[in-house]
Image (cartoon, rainbow, N blue to C red; front, side, top):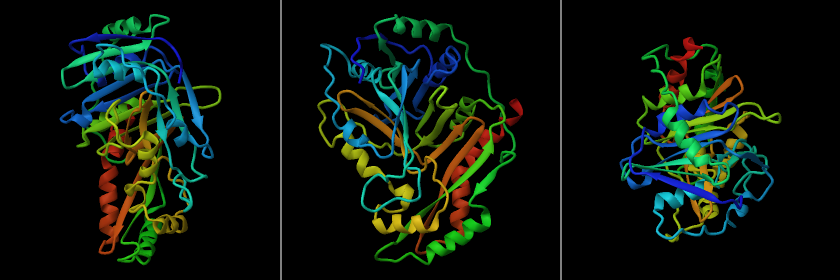
Amino acid sequence: MDDIAIATERRDEAPCTPLEAMARLRAQTPGRGHFLFEAIEPDDAAHRYSIVGYRVRKGEMIPPWSDWLGAFGEIEALAEAEGATEAERLAAGLARAHVGAFTVTSPLMRLEIPVPKDAGASTLMVGATVLVFDHADGSMTAAGPAKGNLVPRILYELEHGTSPPALPASGPETPAGLQLVPDADKLAARCKRALGMLDEDDLPELVLARTCTAPRAGVDPFDIYRAWRETTDAPAGYYLDFGHTPMQGSVQVLGVGHTMLHSRRPGQGGPSWSEAFAASLPHDSCTGSRDPLALRVIAKLEDQSREIHGGAVAYVAPGGVASGLLADQVVHIVDDLCIFSGHVALGLETDPSEAIAASDAHMASALAAFARLRHLS
């Protein structure tokens, strides 16, 4: 973690919503990383905070062969400023945090280790100027490096930024140029084969992955997220823009979710971040079971990358402050391609056609959100 001085400034009343704050700020620094963790329905303690990160200082890639879980387990406690509120401590930690997409990308999930050696690298953003929205009291706290007056700058740009235009109300249900992997016939055959491998005692359920890819055709990825969250019943959403560097093209990860991975505050105890995260990957929505047999069957059935399916989006900050969402509904945008990740859940009594229809419905809101924006490009 960067050993830098952090400044904070609190507003008793947030000047706008987290979504609008992200929209106002992101146009100020094209090409720089930024992120949003949004409580779409902030009705309980698990979704108390929304977070906007802006002007990310640097990026990192965690190679698939590194002991990154162990590295995060070594994070030292963050000194608590006397009299600081929980939101202020959280904001100070997030200004130093690692934020990103922690991925399990390959179908070749091995049996002997909790995170496969051939998984794709996790992509992270490190350090930012942040806004923490506390939905319990309506306040907003800004935090960032004291050097450079970045906190006053983000507050000024938030106040003077332009609100986003309204999105179109409707559009086609399916994006043009959509490609399915596997295709419909192959998916049906794969489901039939998988059902023949299920067993009441050893393997009662299985989850197969599928991918839909379409050209972005100039659509702003943030508009896809805005349109998506309007139609979802998920309580939380996320938008990560990793910026653009000579070594990496433009990459965004966005989606909505129901399942919080883990949230730990200083002094609360419980499992460490690395322990909780290791236990969650691969998670049930990725395999249908954490049983090694499920992983072996998936490796036999699937021949395509799972992209980010089976991973999480999360932040990890000093002091054991960490939280994330399982990446069950996600769009992964790489340059001019939109990749929609989905899955088909199978059980002993499952009708394959019904399972595929349920999978279609699971991905429908993301596909529709993208399709309705295509004519704006």
